[in-house]
Length: 368
Image (cartoon, rainbow, N blue to C red; front, side, top):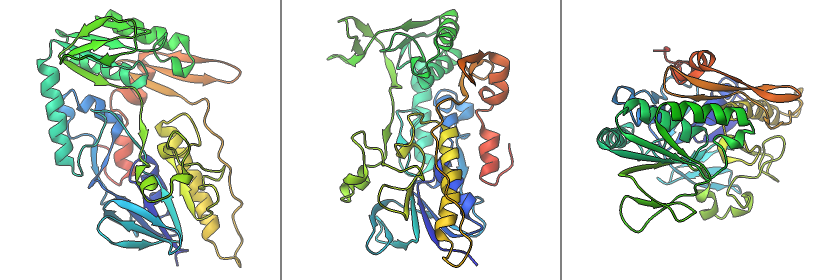
């Protein structure tokens, strides 16, 4: 016997993890506008290398044994009737609803359209553009910008590649100067031009870009890796803007519930629980929320689980691949500066496979 109806809105890393955790104890419905899981970690390489095109797409059909998957777009949470309203008009009743709609990423890390075929066409377009470009500009020197610059360089050793970053050092948001220096050294040793303190904007002429100092840069292809936007516009349009902070993230308490709503949770990139919008944080939040949801659903006559409080991951390992055979790993050290490990660790942990076997297993498929 299952404890109640749980509707999870969003089939990304946090939503998939939470739905799977609750599948045996609740009646789970997972809602997503996509027809497949999008393994975003593999998307930067897929946007550059044709042989990786299909890697990011993993079907949802083996994720849930007892729950169900609904392909559709949530447009409203009716808190009075306790129903999730889809664009099709279908209404999904809930005892608990979980907002796990994630964030919108710049291309090529974006799922375009609603089907894998549409995104495959987008990947193919990026691959053709990269193959033909004489000069590729990447804007943004965080982990994604560094990783994408390395992928482009390895795919196009004959092209000019420039990485422009508005900050004083690469990877400066990690707080590790050594990691930034290591990333810059790798890129420059592979003839990638690194421009620091360069806030870029598009110029008036096609293919022309300007930095904050008035300098002009010409490139026939550009990618912008300058941050993400939480997918919460639908909540604002539905009249639930008071659930959001000024940046558009869902405000949650330490149990990962929307403030003031004990039956509404939010997990992953979409909430304001942590500034570290990375996959390990999303998975940790999903696990904690699953525990707290089980406790909420248990009837008063049964022994209740004590709720767990979320502690933001301030120091967590971060892996930045430099293509499939190199990279750096930032490893937290208690009481000191994070250690920076080199290629062997990074390749084994992420760079070679981009965690694809792990995610395939999570969705019920074999590793290959």
